[in-house]
Length: 339
Image 1 (cartoon, rainbow, N blue to C red):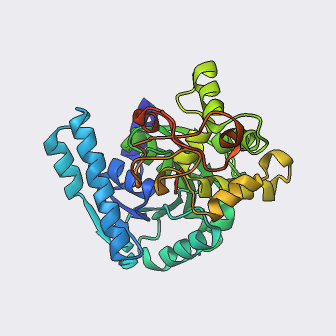
Image 2 (image 1 turned 135 degrees about the horizontal axis):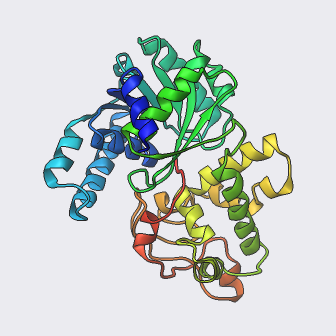
């Protein structure tokens, strides 16, 4: 953290009790980093099965961090003990800051923020959204306190990637901006960049058109998915190719981000390709379902890649490639936001 962020964290109202709504890939990662920073964390999910799956995801992640020597077994146990997973959104009542991390669906996010507005009791509590593309001001309109709403866009895997995009809306109070920045940089130790409240913010505005261009290349039969990815990893030294990265993000999330960007900036480079939509409709969402542009040994986390594409001909043009060989570690080196 910077010295300025550290001073801000000390001077601003405390953020000791954090809430996270949603315990998927992003929500579980956010909850984990908050607990590892010593905070009391309550995570809300829609049902018991989802809550149990989210807690298991956090437990596995902490175990991996411990096995890798990034924290001791005792530190992992302490972090796990700071996390409560519940199906009762009312448990957010006493939180100092609540981060909405549900699916990248505008109606779902509006519903969560409206409910949080009626549940969270502290009048100066910060309500943050982890949206990767939706206008923060539109989400803030679901509450009676838009000056307390801000975008905090984390990146997957949250415990590994250090970046957070800080996205105030036109209505966000400066005090909220300073508290959110002090939380992300001073408490969590993240690197913060400030972005304007426009679809895609900074990273996705640059990244998603690149991913869509890769999808179009496969769709047109110009190259196989494996060759597209190998071209970018070997030729441009990217840690993941664009289609493996899209699988990591989740193809449904990529499409949602693209739709949001295209709605605000109706230019062809933002339009979701038909192939992407067909794959989403078929339930081929990438790593989280075990199959996207590549095939994976396991689902539910960003590891375990078995496959990708075949080489040429019809196999090279298919939307559902045959297995290939990328390192399972790739997903922990570079990633974006599956929500």
